[in-house]
Amino acid sequence: MSDSNSTDFTNPSNFILLGIPGLEAAHVWISIPFCTMYTIAILGNFTILFIVKREPSLHLPMYYFLCMLAITDLVLSTSILPKMLSIFWFNSREINFSACLTQLYFILSFSTMESGILVAMAFDRYVAICDPLRHSTMLTNPMVANIGLTVVLHGAILVLPIPFLARRWPYCRTNIIPHTYCEHIAVVKLACADISISSYYSLSVALLVIGLDVFFIVISYTGILGAIFSLPTKDARLKTFGTCGSHLCVILASYIPALFSFLTHRFGHNVALDFHILVANVYLLLPPMLNPIIYGVRTQQIRDRLLQLFTRKGT
Figure 1 (cartoon, one colour):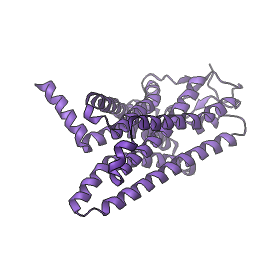
Figure 2 (figure 1 turned 180 degrees about the horizontal axis):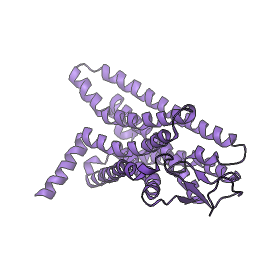
Figure 3 (figure 1 turned 120 degrees about the vertical axis):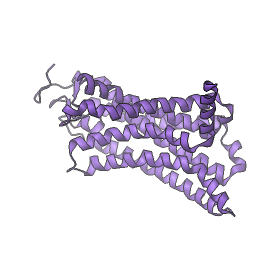
Figure 4 (figure 1 turned 135 degrees about the vertical axis):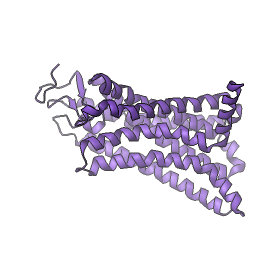
């Protein structure tokens, strides 16, 4: 199939992903840190899932939400990395039109779900610290399951119109996407039609999700900090605040790269394309890599179970 810039088609059978334009000669070298991040993400998140499943003492709302986060991170990183490596290593740049839209949907929907899980984890910490006597009665297993289902449906349904809108546009300019994956705006920009609906809807969803989720997280931690500062001793305040440390680090690791990529894409018109693509990849791969490390290092229960696991194997 031709990948010229002047083809005439309405629904392309394939798109061509260029990888990182301008850095083609360094694709193999660029793949090394990305592959390393993905490997750590896979091992770390599967380890979290294994430890929580294995240890009955960890069958608590906090760790159930952590398992949801791990599954989301696994799907999110797997949505982009294998195709990216096929571009970098084998120059396999073609991606089926439907597969492209499916990848686009998975990236957006699971990013939305991850944000919702962070809100649920903030709520769990709020109840545990501000109203500990009601924590076990409020966050029962059915309630945790309902929260998880709500987060999944919220992400799946809210994002669903985006690939459907992308499918209905006529693509008569080119089938070349200057990116490593099917990023939404990069795809719809190829349409020879007014894509304002797609652009405004995706922007509205991003602002709605990030705005509301950050708002709820801030509200939760305002209450948490108020409860912490009301404790009588410094040791009690530090110990209580330590229970939130992992979650706060995960929030920062998730939102800061995403916000930077979003601002760069929307307003950084003078930012080099290769830098923008690198940032867009990092913000999808960095949180899945860091989240299990943060919880593994900062959460004593997980750290102890992991050490016990290796100790048993060594004996």
